[in-house]
Amino acid sequence: MSENNLSPLRDHSVHLQTLPKSLFTNYFSPLFCTVLFILLLLFHNVLEVFCLHFRDINRRLKQEVSRVSVALTLSQTVKFKQLEELSFLHYNLVHLVLAINNLFDVTTLASMVLWFGNIISVLYSLIESFLKDNFLPLQIRFYLFCNVINYLLWLIIVVRMYSRTQREANETSGYIHQIWNQHFQKKNLSEKTRHLQLISCRLLNTKLIFNARGFFRLDETFFHIMIVAVMTYLVILIQFRI
Image (cartoon, rainbow, N blue to C red; front, top):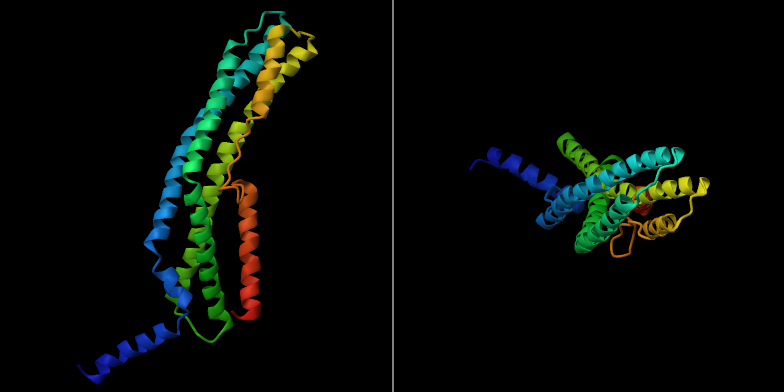
């Protein structure tokens, strides 16, 4: 093979040696990391089903609030059987979704750790290419930028699926409390009405809260915490040129 043919290969080899080592980690993403991300996205479908069930319970309770309001205005008898059935359904759904979430605790924790490491590495490689003289080709910079967008979208999807399900589940107790307030305002405090207060207290004590092995809560605040942590870590790396 001629010297002219080998020259591009040598230049390419020298250029790869000058790239940050972290770039290799992100350019050739580990299969393990990809599998964890996919598993967590599959859990999104499971939470979507539960979110629809909680939403249906809330819709039926809204109808009950309107029906009870009309019944009390007309001095009609209010039946609490459906309210009790919906409260038991909500109670069982909360405990079921928490049991399923416990199966994904380690997956969620490992995925977040890998996400944090990967996005730090990608952002640092991208910023380093502008701060130092080791110029990266436009294609690689574009790839790194797409990686950053991909990681941010993945985090938004994951946090959104947890927070939406949690919000729908925790709204239920408010509707039961509205019905109780309507009876209280009408001075309709029978034995069944006081049982409704117990149902309301039970729902208030069965809040749906997602967390990853107790390390952090998975809600809207988690997204802000992760972004602040990434920015802080990047400032430290850039400041000390690590």
